[in-house]
Image 1: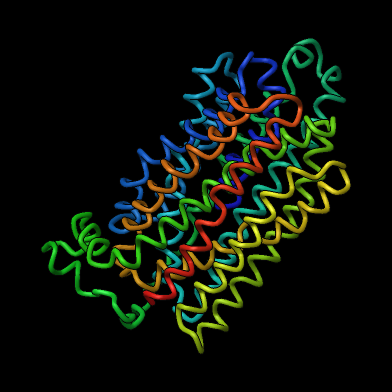
Image 2: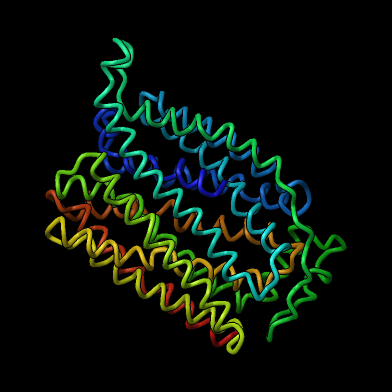
Amino acid sequence: MGMLAAVDRQILSLLINPIKADLGLTDVQISLVIGAAFALAHIAFTLPAGYIADSRSARMLVAGGGWVWSIMTMGCGVTTNFIQMFVMRAGVGAGEAAINPGALAILRRAIPSERRGRAFGTFYMSLMIGAAIAVLVGGLLVGAIERNRDAFGGIMSDISPWRVALFIVGGIGIPISALMLTIRIPAAQAARPPERGVAQDAPAKADADPVSFRAALYFISANRRFYLPLWVSNVAFMLNTAAFAGWLAAMAQRNFGLSAQDTGIALGSAMLIMPQLGLLVSGRLIDRLGVGLGLKGASLVGAIGATGFWLGATLVPQMQTEMAFFAALWISYLFCQAPMPAYATLLSAITPAELMGKITSIQLILLGVLGMAIGPTLVALVSDNFLSGPRAIANALSIVAFSVGWIPVVGFLALRRVL
């Protein structure tokens, strides 16, 4: 399901240029569709999703979310203006609000603490594989539609390939989501022993109901020395990755004149290999270093990964040739998700199992408002207001990446003093 969610979320970034041309949109409007529309709806439904993940059926939550985002992806393919596209894209965000609270709550309950680095690494690998499939298969799909549109008669020849691609991708998700109903949720595992400086009894002091949002907020407040640097770091990293992922395909097409199919093959191939390798190494390092360093090992791994992506996201847009661009991109992709298992491992080690869904949903609100919603639009605003020419988006990406990329590194290092 994580893979399916990533496909539906990422496919639009490959189709930015034809959508912009067909609907007559500006770069800022496009940025709002790929960023704010998704993020704001994601935020609105995240708290209910977190509550359901802890107190109801996480299985039904994820399946229902899958049906919603699949139908809304299909809806994106029939839009004719900015408002309609914004609303449909918001529907995708609403449905995908189910994924992280549901999945992380299940993993927190089912996986022992000494194996969570690998477990969370595997989960985030599924998201990156889905994103790779979106641009790789999406590019091939658009190319196939363009080559064969006349074979289906007059109706198909009048429909833009990007519309057909969105309808097919969304339609596939409906039966796949139903498979979620067949899984068995594992029994909960015992909680990790309290870490130094963590108020493990905070929820009981806050409310008679230990799984209420009031208990979650009290626990966060009691452990703000941990949650503040963790979330500041994670928000800044999300802003950078959302900006990079949102504009990368369009930038490659504009800078080097690539078609959607060529862009999809080139980006998708890199995404299928390098982020998975980074996540695999990151997850294993977290578990191995955890034996001697405890949670400081996870923080160290996260800082190394965040540093690598900071440098990569800043330098990749400045490559002047197609070969140099994709060579640098392959290296950058090694680090683009490497910190994520560290974030999840640290969060799950401190957060009680009965609050994992709700605290994850609170974190996702911060990531959505300050990361996903702002990242792509910030790049467009810098490009439209301060830069010009064919490389405006590329230069804006580098400026944004350089300006915020150091914050995740400092956040991880600050956590080492708390743990």
